[in-house]
Length: 251
Image (cartoon, rainbow, N blue to C red):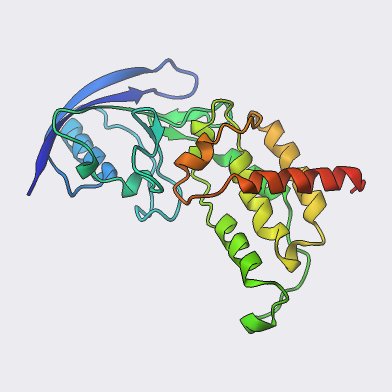
C-alpha cells in the first residue's frame, strides 16, 4: 500500500461577510487509493481530535453524479485530472512532499457559506427562469418512433450530462455561467418537446443569468477544459443563436 505525506494550504472563512485566510496543515501516511474527499475526511478527523474546527466542504453522492463537491486545487477547478469531479480525484495523482493549495469556487454569484462551501442556488434560479415543457409527452414510446435523428438525440444527451457543479464559473476569468446555461438550453432546444418555449426560454435564462451577477463569455475555453462531464462550448454558440432568434422574431 503506497502512502504519501502532504502539506495543505486551505482557505478558511467563517461566512461571506467575514475575512478569510489560508491555514496550513500537514498530513502523513495518506493512502494513494483515497479520493480527495476521503483525504479531507482524514484531515477533519485529526482536527476534531485536536479540538479544532473541521474544514467545511460540500459533498453528497461521492460518485461524480450530483455535482455537490467542488473546490479549486492548485488553481484548477476539481484538480488536475481531466473530466472528474473532486470526489473522483484520487491521491495517487499527487506525490509525497507536495503542497496543495485548496480554495472554494470563487464567483460573485457564488457567495461563500463557510470555508470551501459556496451557495450555488443561482444555478437553480437560472433553470427556473427557463420554465417548463408545455407538451404532454405521455408515456415512454418506442425509440424508433421519435422524430429526431440519433445524432440530435446524442447532442441533447451530451448537454443534459451537465451536473451544475459550477467548475465552469470558477475557472472562467469573467465568472461566466454560459457553459452551464447553454447546456440547459441545448438539451431542450434540440428536442421536439422543447420547441414551443425555446426562444422565450433562451431569453429568460440569459436575463436571469445576468441578474445573478455572472460575467460575460469571451470564449476563453477554460470552462470546457475543467468541465467534469466534457460539455462542449459549441453549446454556447447554440445559446447565442437561440437568444438572437428570439430577439429578431419578437418572442
